[in-house]
Image (cartoon, rainbow, N blue to C red; front, side):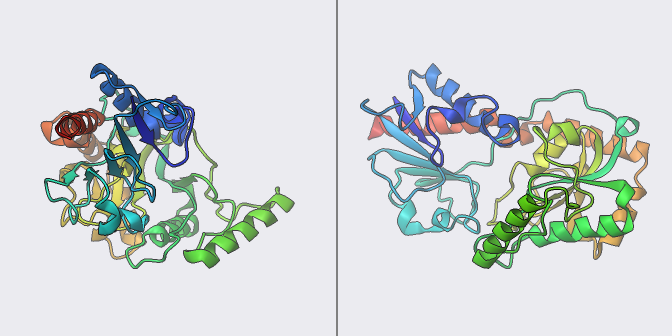
Length: 337
């Protein structure tokens, strides 16, 4: 037996389809990891399910304050900007091995490089004329608990307000919490958020704070399959190597992302697959650029995306590579312990 620690989740919740955010897609890699360990004769469960059993090792999603098992490993999903313990060298030293995309930490021995996992399954996607949404943004209305100069939440709000004012018919906003004003960073921002939510419950029929908001969705593909372009900004410009699933959600839907966030000089994705949002000095420039993209140009983007997703270069970002790396490296280390 082996134990998976994901937040405070119990009863093998991380392995149940539909249990996670966006219809359970967030947990898909963990379900596949459990299946991959099972092939090797290891049953992966949450800690409560393994109570009373002899557990060979523990695997944590993000570094934890409590590291009790002598054979403990962690995948550092969040950047230290969001979760400071994931960059605390004293805390990280308690793990046998760590896996992360954070190039500042990778040493090839104790800390191994491993990108965010993504479902890169190729599928038929709508073309330019079959998409009824021009531009979308999918995100939750949130902010960093600890303010940071590399935060990008405010850039999303800037883009939303620009479209609402200058091109409301060309934009739609999806995600949680946009019925209240934009959440501010820090503890005071959290307090203000609670007050706004309380007021919202008292006056449920009041207009949403963001008129472009179309509500929440179960799966991102429900919207991205319909959209030509997506404002795809990371939560922050994280550590070198940081790149979350956001851009891949767009690519696998054949939606062209306007991307900002990677600390790389250039994201490790071909330039013909996305639009670099940093090239625009203003939202006006960005809108003018994407409005000039016609069906033929859009088809070129989609062709570049298909070729990239089918290439060996994309596999480092796949669920299969992520699972194989964790299983191979952890079991090899367990055998040496």
